[in-house]
Image (cartoon, rainbow, N blue to C red; front, side, top):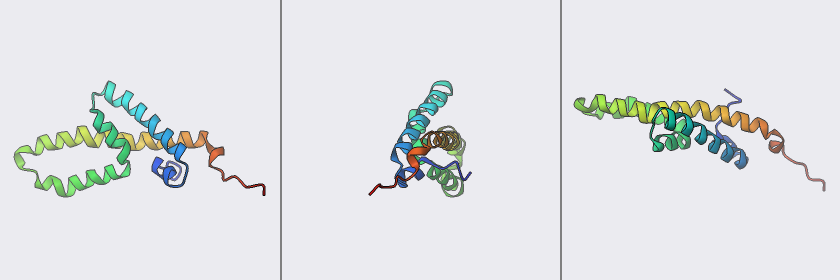
Length: 119
């Protein structure tokens, strides 16, 4: 998992082009895969791409705290909504995003090497 870093890692380490390209390609792959084939909502895909690891923490927060506060009558609907609109897109985006970022970073490896000044 060491090599499969988030696009946010590249954003905060100064490799913004790799981060932006990774986000765009991940969004495109998820849109083609989840929106067109699996009929997920657009906002679920956008949220999944932007949240990355925070999305997984959101799911943990729901499972441990928020779910207990949902009325029993609505628990089935809430669980189904969280599963289809958050959990599946976030988990898929997590793995697809890391794989795409790895490929983009590998293709742009020469841009990541710090350049020495000649002076």
